Length: 477
Image (cartoon, rainbow, N blue to C red; front, side, top):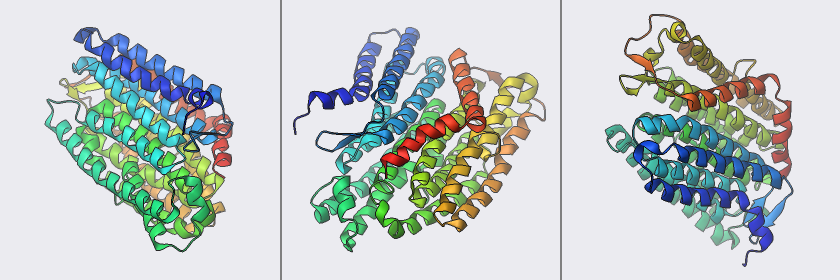
């Protein structure tokens, strides 16, 4: 297989990100520790350039590299979400990285490589390509989780994530091996052609693929890593990880299930619906008991994975693009919540307790209002992006005849309203904590502003983004 010029031209966004990662890592080694802010600008420009090139390539379906890679509407939508989230994560990270004197060059290079892995997963149309994307996404996140080398919690988070992540990769690889043994190929097209067979080996292989991807998305019962890793990792890493890993995992899930196995929806929809229910229930009820905001947002992430799994379990076009819209909304509202935390510090450390937000409204009404908007959106209340996102996936479940799944999703949302609104209530009551001060700079404030605007815009005017993500449903037909 010899790549053509057209193949390389269509791969230009990925090449920009990969090249920028190499340049920034080398450039950072020659810069003084206290003067590494140009790296943030360079990383942002590289991501924006890749995003612009992705949008310029459009949604015209093209099979690249012998059918292993697809430049289509699904890749366009999912890569747009990944790159946009990466840009916001870079804005959130810069002040923290400089304040804590972490190596900026390596940090931004790892952020770029993780984004590259998600882009590969979004466009992969071969199991080997998806696996390469999965590892390209995962390995930088293992390192980033342990990036604060002087913090024992960070070291513990990195080790737990690495060990469990490596274990899940074995499941995914073994699933590829079994599928190859049955089909003689790792192509998703070939898998879809023979999926109707009654081969036990093939079904086991598909199940093992699901386990590998479910770990990355933090689907119950493969979620155990998330709370500890979210709590121990540096705050901007937790923010980035919560979004980029989710986009990559659901990109692959959409490619494999509605995209490839859509004709066999009846065979796997029940299993995915069960995983969705377990994930929603555990994520929401466990979050009720949390006092640490990073752990609360970890269980929140698990719960939202369950809501997104509703769209995958529906197995329809509407379910697929509903998940894509949900990923857009989730990116804005989650990064917005983390941006507020990055604007605060407690005695030079992370202000990651719910009590740290006590009385915040009396000190900074705008910051409290921004956090309240994000919490309301995470709870799925109108007029925010979270409400529209949940409406789309619930509607997809109803149209697919999965009424019970939609009803349970609504009930889980009711439970989640308690702990999200508890955070908002804390900010508008009580006396401010004397040891909590403001720490974020203009970059974090800009990311927060974009997040809040995105949450409200998607809630009030969802039509443009809805039309954009509906292309994904057509591509995965």
